[in-house]
Length: 404
Ligand SMILES: Nc1nc2c(ncn2[C@@H]2O[C@H](COP(=O)(O)OP(=O)(O)OP(=O)(O)O)[C@@H](O)[C@H]2O)c(=O)[nH]1
Ligand SMILES: [Mg+2]
Image 1: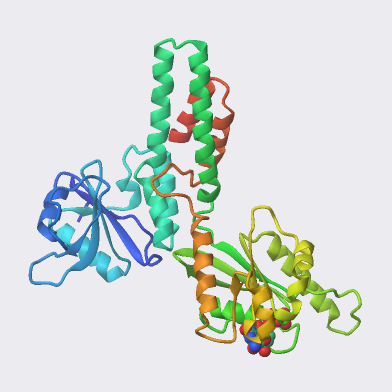
Image 2 (image 1 turned 60 degrees about the horizontal axis):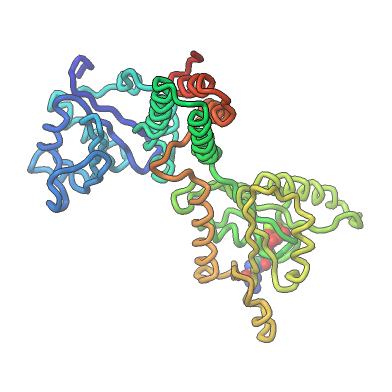
């Protein structure tokens, strides 16, 4: 099938990377293809508005089982078909469209005169590995940031054309600055959308950091042992928590080493130096202690190179070793775990807290979000624009990639 057809389909998400695949469909026969192939799960609301979602099955013929999908109409009359990320499922849907004279095209043919913002967002979307990340990138391929720029260009133009008095112009510029600052704050998370969030476990030796890491990732990634100093280097493991990709780092137990003279001391010092480096760049830091080290935790925490951006959680591990009279005094510590047990409810509670914090590191949905450094730099420049002309120039460069 060649691309001279006027109705087009493309795979918007990366091949073989995501659990979910998104197929774009647009052109004069798009609605007809949907009528012929899409069987909604319920017939509740007949008419669909752009952006709404409808669950159902994509059937190329009535005698085949079809693929479970979510269908979203687009403002331009096209559709997004969200389905299983496997090649077979995607190819079956594309084949059914090809049978209806729809051309499968690559990403560059799919893009029309779209803003460079959309092209950049499509590149990011191709590299998303989870649905949570892809949802944010999809908002941008659908034009959230483009529309925000166009809206402001229009407002500035209107004020300019109507010769708005200076006071009114100043108010408008202030509003733009405020709006642009919100966009930039989302951009701080947006430019890192496809990077895994860094979750670091730190604490004194032998408190159960590696055991906790193994529980979090669900397999025995780290060696654990009852002697202190088991973990020497920073051990990393990639996982996904609540749809957010996470790079977990298990670090060497941190303790005073100045007095140590034995042969392994220099290795231990190097391990501690590397642990400190991991701590400095953590998005989320778990400070792990055990009952016997609990009263030194404030002192321990003060010694760590923790950045202001890092979310810190304290975890009391080996809570099974608390003796009865200690329990009431430790009740205020929210996270108490038993990392040597597989079904410890304390670990479940900790995972829920981690999920909440990790989700808060993703930009909000349905908002204009810069997701490349170029976009973020121009949005930052917009916050400083001290005239309509300067603001207009930044907005147009943001939209087109070309300085006016
Ligand atoms: N009773 C009890 N033992 C635990 C718990 N968690 C870990 N352990 C044991 O404590 C010992 C040390 O565990 P690790 O996970 O190796 O501790 P670590 O903090 O990584 O130690 P280093 O790498 O040496 O700093 C092992 O024998 C674990 O089986 C727990 O919740 N309760
Ligand atoms: Mg360890």
